Length: 322
Image 1 (cartoon, rainbow, N blue to C red):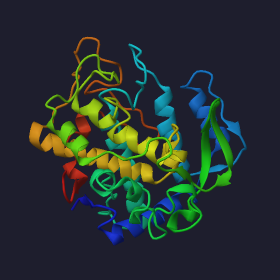
Image 2 (image 1 turned 90 degrees about the horizontal axis):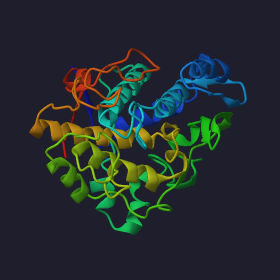
Image 3 (image 1 turned 120 degrees about the horizontal axis):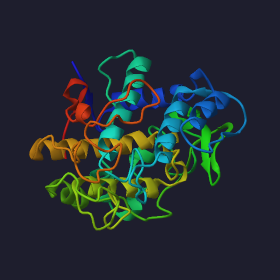
Image 4 (image 1 turned 30 degrees about the horizontal axis):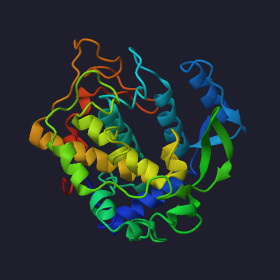
């Protein structure tokens, strides 16, 4: 059997399982400390220094560091906003690998090898609602994610702790604190179903110059949210705000609900367009780290290539594709 990923608003069991895992994995301390993590990152990120207090880090903290570190690793040739996980073709396969590793932690925590990550259908269950309802829908109640603005101190995620924080001068190891949000303050509305349809209707996965140019209208660039941005994925990060804004955005468990929905959109696109990925290995001027057989940056478990994750069927499926 494989995991089935379901809508968090329609599957109470999946919701409870995920939220319990998020809280517990943020308290499950590892042998990795802020100092030892900093020593590892200093070997690959020039000039890196972990600031703040020395403390053991949790399983969840390691995912936060992994995401932030991938954003610090550039590509050749350089391009604005492009790194080894964003701003180019590898955005979708890298996050698919990343989600898979978190899903495996969810399965370990729950004891269910078929447990799947839930997704948040932020268009149908968000942007298609009236503006005033987007911030007060059931997702932001104490039975699910907690409040959409301010410090999350009630509900299942009241026990979810943040220890790694991005600041202007890098990342800091800080005394554990709750998640913080500021929904709707920097952009008023979530993406709409019409925006999702536009991304699904685009026939090109990606194309040169393989970057975040607003003029590059491809499926990947539309889903990532640079065209008329912030849109789709990017817009969700900006709309939630707070801990969802910086490179340490996986601090907020809504990060994985967002990206699970992004992955669901990509999977829907591939069912109608084929399991296509560009650039190939010999594509002129293709950025390093973004070609189909390039190893993707992994700090936890083994690395995969974009080719290896084009068909997720051996790992999971979705209950419904958009």
